[in-house]
Image 1 (cartoon, rainbow, N blue to C red):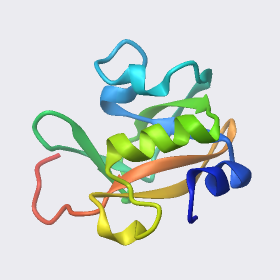
Image 2 (tube, helix red, strand yellow; image 1 turned 45 degrees about the horizontal axis):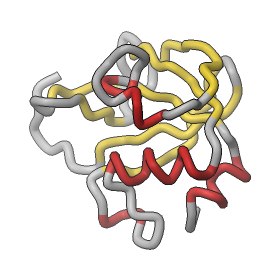
Image 3 (spheres, rainbow, N blue to C red; image 1 turned 180 degrees about the horizontal axis):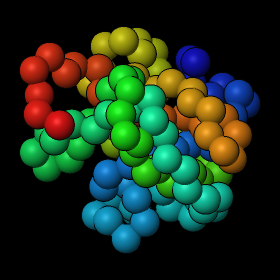
Image 4 (cartoon, helix red, strand yellow; image 1 turned 120 degrees about the horizontal axis):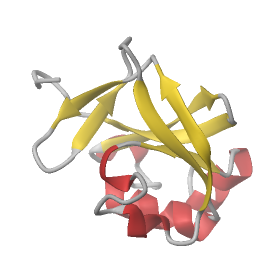
Length: 119
């Protein structure tokens, strides 16, 4: 997807984990996004990156995510926080991919550089 606006045309939902979840330190980046619900994704694993977690696509016991309905402006803010560059998507720390959730498709940020990290 070339822009946050294009991304929201595909799905206006984002699934978050870690510090973006409600009540945690980065939840303000979601602004007034509407909370949709939760899900447990068994095809991602969280890694401890110190001050924040990073997710990688691989089988796990399940990771609890929160799903929000976002606008293009909110998606752009999340892209900024996660260092996702819409012009060169593979150049940043995170990649934004679509996962199927029980609430429908949702964007999720996967950490792109995870060689030998602890779960």
